Length: 358
Image 1 (tube, rainbow, N blue to C red):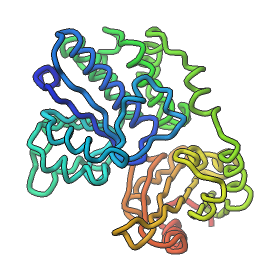
Image 2 (image 1 turned 90 degrees about the vertical axis):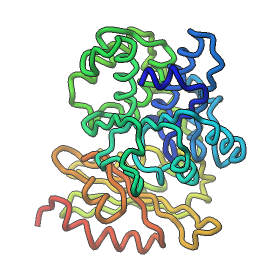
Image 3 (image 1 turned 45 degrees about the vertical axis):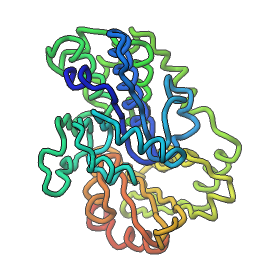
Image 4 (image 1 turned 45 degrees about the horizontal axis):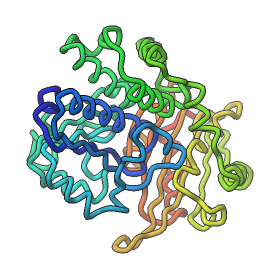
């Protein structure tokens, strides 16, 4: 990986649609690392992070976030960067379709592509191209893509002494540490799931030694609601939450019209799916959000988030019914069609995949 980065002059870092804290954190950590390599040798190395669409406003404070290019807003400039790239670093996704229109351009490029991901599905081979990825760092057991990126960066800095112990050998810059901590925190629900591995806390200790201000990061991410977002959250819980007591299950749905009523902005629904799990005897939570149909797509998209507690997986349900997947306790999926159709699929299938009491 170090050789690929050292040789490349035009590096493009890509992450998935609707970028969250882990996507932004892992991509920006790589950006800071690659920029550091450039500065060490005073080269003309160009490093760019491109996201398919806008990231939430509550992540705009992250070091380097203002340098990120949004494909939906600057498609021509981004196409040029992708065409000129001689190395792609792809983080927090494992299929080109997860980066929207950029996916086809990634497939068409002959530049080497390094995959860094923690999702359960096998990395895509892209049809007849089994060697599509020059390198694959796929670790479904990891809490987040940021955890893998941290281990890779420190392993490279330690000349390949291994991923498991590398964080004890080297510290990272404060900018990298801040990005990594943000991804670790957000992709584990502030360390409430996918976070039982003791090594994760060794990494956190290393990040704190690098100067990370964890309380300030928490405040920047979780305590910056707009009035509209707070009202939307209240509406979702009071008016739109249904409980299925025999399966300890909660469902919340929000239509595009309802989102418009509260002046929805990207990220305003972040965390809603976790809230029903605070109810006694609710162990599963599903949240559905409607996106209006776009030109060329006659049906709206229903984006779906799944959460669960303990030994109660939701990833198989998300994968087999809703074309998604993820971790056992935190997954995602989608349906193209009406909200009514999505709810029908939900109600027809939950009994097959969830542990209920009859």
